Image (cartoon, rainbow, N blue to C red):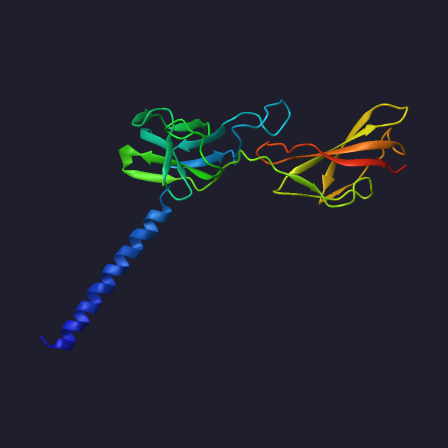
Length: 230
């Protein structure tokens, strides 16, 4: 057999093998993942003050997914680099029925230490299927409170500010004159817009507090005393 004919046969065999591999890959794409309908609490803090009606409802992250068929499963929390930091209950190797599975992570490592601020993911080890799936939806552990800085002159209008991270800024106005009372406003885009209230036209003391998506609150910041627009 000539070298040319041999080369043609080798190339043909390689192309055929590549075609089979491609078709197999496409078949795998069409198969349903063993888990679906994931729901991940994106932000949480282990130290934020828990109060009804606030962003911080608990000191743990709620995570759930739907298991399409029963099997032996182990659940873990992995860092953004893929390192396992904690094993979740139920214990590894637990048989689970198909349906929704809900777990919580308290933000601690397997040794009991508080995990570092950062991005984490749920890792689902489907032992009976010999598959490991890392849920792409991130879990952001954030135990660091934001800071809010006054960028306008204290006692001047308009009140402008900046925050160290994305946060909602609450603005508390307390009357200093004969008519005692207070009013709560929210900052927007680095500026405080005062809507009309019973304190309009009065001299008030202004305090700013920033709250980040995990529920951590900054230290109160005084913006001085101003007269609200009438």
